[in-house]
Each structure stands twice: as C-alpha cells, then as structure tokens.
Figure 1 (tube, helix red, strand yellow):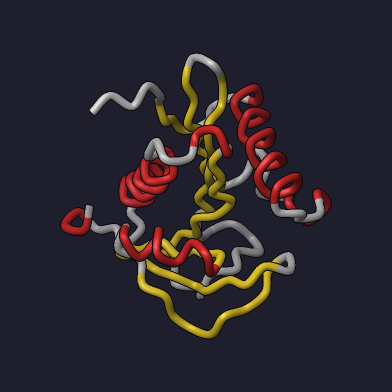
Figure 2 (cartoon, rainbow, N blue to C red):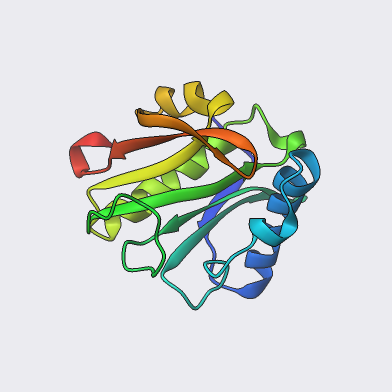
Length: 162
C-alpha cells in the first residue's frame, strides 16, 4: 500500500516546529487544551525525548513522542524499561490515512531499538479502541487530563510483539 507520506524521527528544529504546529491545531485549537499546558520541558531536542513526524509533500500530517525512562518528571509507572508514548496527534485532513498507526509503530520501534520492554500511554477515552486494535491494554481507573477523560494503557514492545 502506498501511503504518500513518511514517518521519521525528528532531528532538527524545523521538524520539531512542524510537530508543534500539528499539536497546536489538534490539541489547542480543536480540543481546547490550554497552550501553557500543552508544551512542556520535554519539547526540545536536548532532552531524552524522541519526537516523530509524519509528513507528505504538502507538509506535516501528524506527530507523537516517546519519553525515555531517564527523563526527570516522567509520569509513567517507574519501571526502568518502560517508555511513555504521548502527544500523538494527526491533523484533521490526514485522518483515515493510517497516519496514527504509522506514528505509533514508529514510536514502538524506537522504544524497542533503545532496549525498552514496554510502552505506556495515557489515552483519551474516545481513542481506547484505536489503541486496543494496536495491542494496548487499559489498566487503572479513568482520570482527567487537561479536562479530558483518559485511561492508562500499556503494550510490550519486545521483538516478538512487533
């Protein structure tokens, strides 16, 4: 299947800015998340965070990030080999093209490449089915994040699971 877009690990400020533009459109404009809580200390090329970007010839389509366990303030369960997938966003015009799936798989591959055993995430409850189809399992109670209901989810990312 030809997707017409590429997903890559972000390596420069221009690509990181493209990630921020998608997040602003999806989280701040569409979902009403205050900009001051959308962006944080992990939004840099200088910390142990891996940002991924999906783009085509017309520009950015989606983004996501992987917080590595060594990142101070990591809000995962604390296991040393568990990363945290977050800030997954796909531009409205790009939805239905498999961009979200491609981003999640790229983040999982990067986690596996770095020796992590699992990836956690905090899914908006309306997106639980999306993540369940990708092998994530919900755990713990529902909780609010930026005024939006979420559930914690996890998926192993060892060689046999991808």
